Image (cartoon, rainbow, N blue to C red; front, top):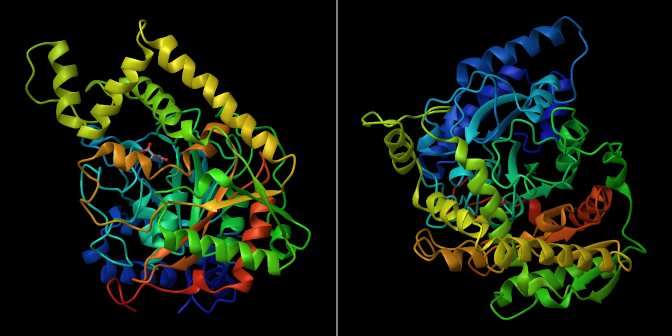
Length: 488
Ligand code: GLN
């Protein structure tokens, strides 16, 4: 059948399939894969089929249709969709029904996309494996004993197992790119401010961005063009015109300068990952790009800086879940204070509690200067590292993750080990620049490896240009999970 979003859209436009058939095909595939993958927290069959019938009726009547008309997509369970329960995979938000659409969701719906379900994540997007979900553990479609990455692990697994041609996630420190890498799909984190965060449940507000997970760069370019743009509903969204992303798909990389940071090939990185990334660099060179060694000297401070900034912002953002305003309230409590503490204690998982404690600590008066303020200063240095590098190169190439997918449970009891798996992704959010992960190989046990491409602010066209040229020369992105994972 069809796989990519563009293939589905061609078929829909040419009336080879109806929107209803596309949605039914997605649910059929979900029926096959979900018992093993567990990518979805909820499905919305009735509404999706009604939406599909509406699109089909419009098409039959010859009415103008949006660019994604009839395309089934999935969204991460931290994006508000009016009238549909949004839990961020947290027990604390059980029963919370948003009264409005996230801007991204409104744009997808206006373009005719059909939202068929909500994908699993680490609770409130805090994690790198999707094991921190309050509801279920998602499995990597390439090997169901392994994690899909996180926090957008549900979205990545749904695309990798071909349950949907496209899914949306959020990326605060790698949550689109890292699961994309571990599941062998394409994941794009736009520049901070490129896509509205309105209606994305906040984790780290100065870091969060929404982006697509797709089977290839062509689909990523299409999805970004639908969701990008200034939004008066998000004061941090940028008033920068949206580039023509499709135009970047066909440019060659000849003459492009690709920087490779020496700090990113350090000990701890799996040799097979390093080798696959080196091979990708060689293929860029063969296509006429120039490979230049660069330095990002503050890289070693990225993890501590990120985990101070992100937890500080999280502790403030999550203060609103008090059992009164949203979602679940502790059923038995003796007074107001008891309602707050019990609702939070019962509703939040351990990782969320750990981060609220850490964030509150680094913001408290005695420690603010020593930790939070210091982290902000280092954040500036990290941003300057990228500014300096981008004076010499158009794109930076790195591994997305130091290892391929690890076993479920392997790092679950060791938060520091888990945090270290974000080593190549978090600086990008601290600097606010765009990043994309694309498949660039497999380990000898058949697990996908991701190549991360970075560009200067609003340099998404450069990512798309490089990524698309690479995918025209390679076929890693077309391979499907089989063997130990989901066959067929
Ligand atoms: N793994 C990182 C964290 O736990 C990033 C998560 C994200 O990007 N949402 O914070």
